Length: 387
Ligand code: ADP
Image (cartoon, rainbow, N blue to C red; front, top):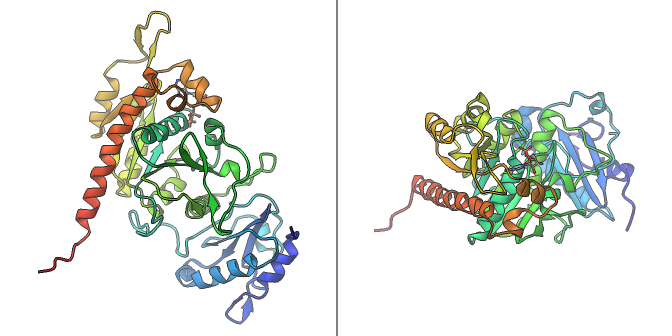
C-alpha cells in the first residue's frame, strides 16, 4: 500500500480553493491524522460561513480520498479556532489516530432544541441515549446489557460508545482491532454477541491518545456516528460520556434521539446528578424514558436474601418526584461486574440468570416507549390526505 504522508495530504489540499486562495495558504486545515489508510482532519471556518462551506468540505475530502493508499477521508468543518498554537500553523503536528477531528456539520454548534436533520442515519429507526449525571455508576455496563437485552427480544441493535474520554465498550463486548471499511467511505461497525458496535477506543491508539478539546470532541463524535456503516437497525443505543456538559448538549441537539435513559445509583438518585441529566434532555426536548437504578440492592449469594442499599422505595419515590418512571432496579452483584469487565456480558452469556432477566424486563419497557415515541413523532408530521 502506498505510504500516505502529511506532505502528500497538504499537497492535495493545496488544490482546494476557498475564493482566490487555497485552503493551506489560508491556514484553514488543522489536526491531520493518518492511521492505516484512514485520514481525518478539520477545516476551520468562521461560524457564519459554516452552512455555505459543505461543497468545500466535500472537495477536500475528495482530493485526499483520491490519493493512493487512502481508504477513507474524514473531513469536518469546525466553527471554532482551536486554542492550541498548532492551529495557526500550516503544517499540523498530529499524525496518529483517525476519527478524531472537529466537526461542525457545516453549521455552527447549538441550533435550537434538537435541531438534528431528519435523514441523519436513514437506516436506523430509533436512537436511545444512556446517560448518567456522573461517572462510575455503571452506565456502560447498563448500556451493554441493555443493548443485548433489546436484541434478545428481537431488535436489530447497534451500540455506540460515545464515552470518548473512557471508552470501555470494546472491553465489555470483547471486541478489538481496527475497524474496516468495505465501501472506502464509512467504517463498518463491529459485531459480537449479535449486536453491532463502534467505539472511539477502536480508532485511537492506546499509547497515542488524542487530546480532546471541547469543540473537537463534540464534532468528532457526531462525525463518527455519521461515518459508521451500521446497516439497518431497529435501535441504536448510545453510551454517552458521563456528566452533563457541552458535549451532551451538542449530541442531543445534533443527533435525532428518540429518547434517553438515565442510569443512577441509589445514593445519587437523591442527589442532584440524575436530575441534572434529566433536565438537560428535557431542555432539548428529548423524551426521557426514565431512570435505571443500578447497584440498587444486594442479593446474598448464599441465602438469596435481598438487602437494600438504601430504602427499597427510594428509587420509585425519587422517580415520581422527577416526574419520570423507574424503569428497573439492577442489583450490586459480582457476577455483573466480572462478566462485564471480562467481555462476557451477563445478558449474552447467562441469558437465563435472574440478572439477565432484569435487563430484559427493562428492555421490554424501553422497547414499548420507543414505539410510542415513534408513533408520536409520526403523528406530529403532517400527512397529505388524498380525497
Ligand atoms: P460508568 O460507565 O458509569 O463509568 P461502568 O459501567 O464502567 O460505569 O462500571 C464501573 C464498574 O462498576 C465496573 O467495574 C463495572 O463492572 C461495575 N458495575 C457496574 N454495574 C454493576 C453492578 N450492577 N454490580 C456490580 N458491579 C457493577
